[in-house]
Amino acid sequence: MGKVCRECAAPLAGRSDKQFCSDACRTAYHNRKYREQWHDTARINSILRANRRILALLCETGVREISLADDRLKGFDFRYCTAVKRYPLRRTAYRCYEFGYLIAGGRICRITRYTDGAI
Image 1 (cartoon, rainbow, N blue to C red):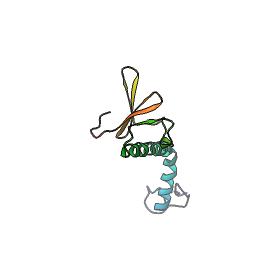
Image 2 (tube, rainbow, N blue to C red):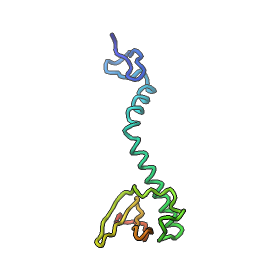
Image 3 (cartoon, rainbow, N blue to C red):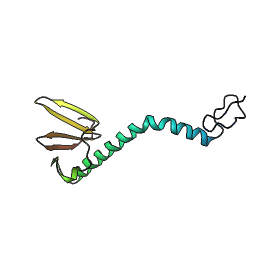
């Protein structure tokens, strides 16, 4: 009994180490294999990009302080950020890529765009 394609089970001809009958089958096999593995990463990256877009828009329009209930924050997911830094007096700075923000008293305070990599 000869070897068969790992994707479509068609008989394989050619090299002894061949695993797929075509490039299409090889691509389909790997796409299916990695889809589940990368699904969560892609979803989280999408959320982070949306958060970044919102912070960038706020910075562009000069907003430095905003209520957490403001409609301009609609779609912002506070569960996701790229970095967290805790300061004394229970202050916490969050980072979403190059944008940093503090949350205090129900408001986002000090939305800042960093260019030097500091938080």
